[in-house]
Image (tube, rainbow, N blue to C red):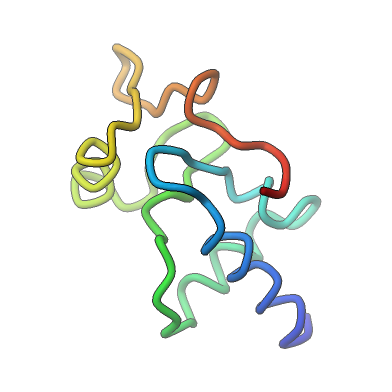
Length: 92
């Protein structure tokens, strides 16, 4: 992938408003792992904690959960992000 595609993903992450999330696949349709790779290799200051798995589970565990909780992101009884409420599926 190109640097431009990486920057596009970072721009989409930066645009996620407080209290909401997007999935890896929302940010890189057809290649959700690319979003994870971009987050892993970047030193850009983006709200990484607002990116969750397609089922609402968290890749970064308690550290991510606390940040989302502090922003008012709703969780299900199963401990996953309630994507019906908190997910922004399209570019904002």
